[in-house]
Image (cartoon, rainbow, N blue to C red; front, side):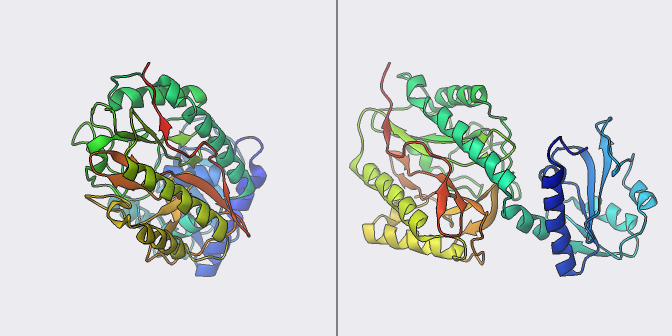
Amino acid sequence: MIPHGLSNEMALRTQRIADQLKSQGTDAILVSENANLYYTSGRVFCGFTYITADGDVTYFVRRPVGLTGDNVRYIRKPEQIAELLPQMPQSIALELDSAPFSTVERLRKVFGDARVANGSDILRRCRAVKTPYEIARLTESGVHHAMAYSRIPRIYRGGMTDVELQVEIERVLRNEGCLGQFRIAGGSMELFMGNLLTGENADAPSPYDFAMGGAGLDLSLPVGCNGSAINPGQTVMVDMCGNFTGYMTDMTRVYYVGRLDPTAAKAHQLSIDIHHRLAQEFHAGCEAKRMWEVAMEIVAEAGMDDYFMGHAQKAGFVGHGVGIEVNELPVLAPRSRDVLEDGNVIAIEPKFVIPHVGAVGIENTYVVRPDRLECITNAPEPLTELLYY
């Protein structure tokens, strides 16, 4: 069942979850979301991972056929779980933040009189602190991510629309090994292969809680590029999928055509300055909300408040955790209660929208260390000109 070579890694993750269950006085947890199934087994399957507070794990599988292991049990329906457990728990944690109501009610009946607790936060907290194996996977994604971005100036052609350029960037990413899957934590947020914004479209509000919006190509997916021509004097912000290993880095770089607006240039350099300041000053043990506060202090001193984290519509954060999904913990926002921990992986994205010009600012992914933030998306940060070919 567990992929070759990952037995010790999965045992470490199982023990983390078991320790959380013990600390909350809960007997077991049942996992069914794809991201959490991947975290607890090393693969996505149709079924459930069942973990007890003693660290025992059972995989209840519906599909695919052919998975083997002493702790694998094939089932046709959830009700069979009760028949296969050696002992029913008195309390069970379920993914109450995301599981459909009908699923939760069905599982409540499976576990009879057991007290039902919310296991979503347990899984979020465990996943927020990455193991050395996970950090290695993220670092590998960062290398491929940067390599793909390095090719963007060479694929631009004069007269392109934002859609045409994004399609070519998607091709480069896929050829570099990008899996194409863009998993996002949080309700009702969707995105296909990332976000590319140019000109006025960068100021178009989106219903999703992203740093940047865009009108999108259709009201069924109202975010990102909208078919705008890439014109001289406009910026092109590229925030595209960094999932090469099942673990996603988040990286934004900005390009421009023809000439560079002075306000845009100032804002972009300010974003770089914020990154360097935060990377130098923050480390494990620091309050996440202080990162937002320091960024705001720098922006206010430069007089760039009106453009920071949006113009027509603003985002209320300056970064977030990344891993199997984007928007994991911790959250770098003014009301965040998170404290940075050794092994957190965070994306910092101080961005600006300049009306009529477009979006500027970089995003990098960092590993939180005891004494620093270690950047793993090492691509050039300055604005890059897209030359006509």
